Length: 160
Image (cartoon, rainbow, N blue to C red; front, side, top):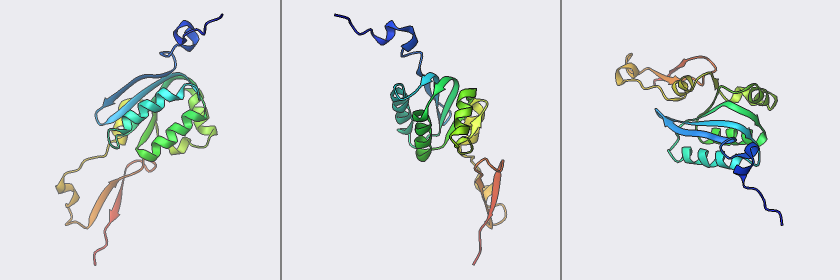
């Protein structure tokens, strides 16, 4: 009778080779470093790590995809579902990931950054002191832009 080999007996399917290489908090964001092939068979550990990150109450999630050699629609689905819960960014996507985001038509929906630090800075809310909010007597307010316009947008409050 043949035995089914353990995943670690086959170096091509080692758990440490595919999925989540690292998961850690970094200054107000949660970083998931993904690697290898992430498909329907391997998405479950990634989902668990995303769920762990979301337990931290709206913490932005950064997906470092610099080591991903293959991913499919299950990964894209997870990115978009996570985006519904909190801010999401993709860091250093490989050519495969970049092409998949483009072909799927979601490249413009997910901000992409070269470094984890850039992504963390962009996703964390900017804090301003009370003096800057009320500099002109309260007739103007500021909010962070969505990144598409490259900065802050000025909003005018209407006085009655």
